[in-house]
Amino acid sequence: MGVDDTTDIFNSNLQIIQVQDKDVHEDFEDIYDHNIAMLTLVSDVTLRASAQVVKLANLFEGGPGSTCTVTGNGIDEGGSKTTKLQVATLSTVGLLSCIITWYRRSEEFKVNKREVCAVSETATPCTGDNGGPLVCKRPLGA
Image 1 (cartoon, helix red, strand yellow):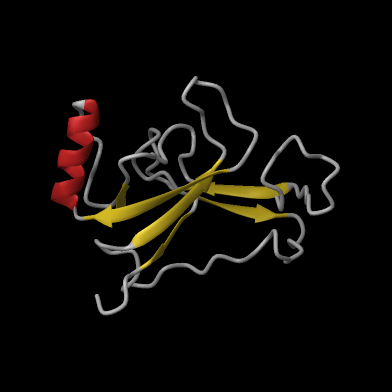
Image 2: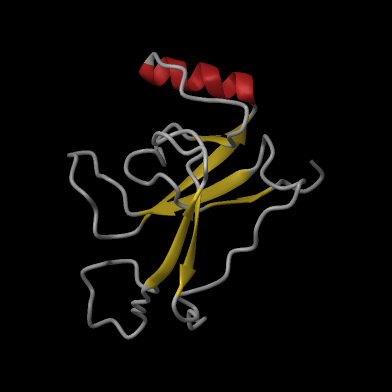
């Protein structure tokens, strides 16, 4: 962690920390539903500009109309795994709008009421990024 290119092994910001334990949601079955896990690291992360804490959302953040950023090392348009951290800006929408959006794109209903739905005309967080952080800020006055 701490770098945006996994091949940049000489970067002074690179931190390699072993995972001590992985706690996967008990109802996880496929790549979409209950796709969450908690990792326990063997040592602390050194916080600096390249490695920061992301605050968990409260009840009032991330609702429809929020602007969100998603990051991850996914799969590019050619189907290859990326080595550079990918970043996309998305907007959250309500469940009905989400179902309609995903059906138009894939002719499948991939959404359920437990999920936060974030969409964009130009980006998607779903290709190889499952479980990546979605960081949202609800618009002021909303």
